[in-house]
Length: 291
Image 1 (cartoon, rainbow, N blue to C red):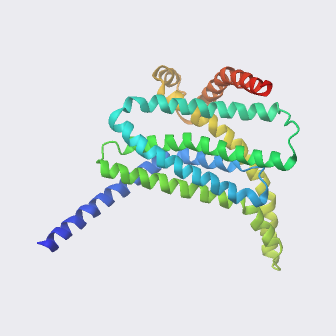
Image 2 (image 1 turned 90 degrees about the horizontal axis):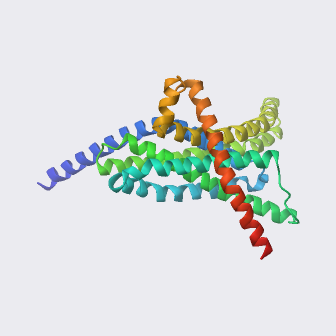
């Protein structure tokens, strides 16, 4: 009897694991696009960091991303059970924040502000801390979208399968994204290492890597900013019925047209949020300096 019960238990566990694996695979396909944006954004966040600080910054953001998902997975499960109506509004708040970040990056790019009298080492430390905080905040929004999209795939599954699939997606995506980011940011060091090898082929590969990496990092910086608008704008174009119907009627809901619509929506939403938020932040900053 005991042996029979054990085999029954093992069979149930195997069945659940099969369901979790299947749902995880389906959810991974659904969230692949957002993960690509997540990669571009996070690789962009470490541009400009001193070489010896690149991996510590990536590790700090990866830990923040892990804790984001520790918060988001239980929260998503609770919302799915008790308040599913709040999921889309919260996602749109996150989308507005991403659009705001994108416009703010453009403003800092084309209208840079003076840094005051902060010394160079202090400014570098502040800039690194700011990059880490900004990356973790951005990761929170993208992680939320990944978890919500995955939740939509597994919504009809049992609670056990939901928990297993969401945990697998959360851990897998974190390891994949930040592992790849670490490889990207240290590729130039690998290229420099190859230059020191006696082999002509190794030196040639090293020179190629060193030529390509600056272009790749600049490309990722541009892609990261575009991703903010595409993801943030996409949240609005896909979750506001009137806007979605308007785009669908004009065949702007697929392919490059859909991406253009998401981009324009992202820029518009980000500009609107900046017009409201930045003057408030400026007044608060001025008030704090006066006191």
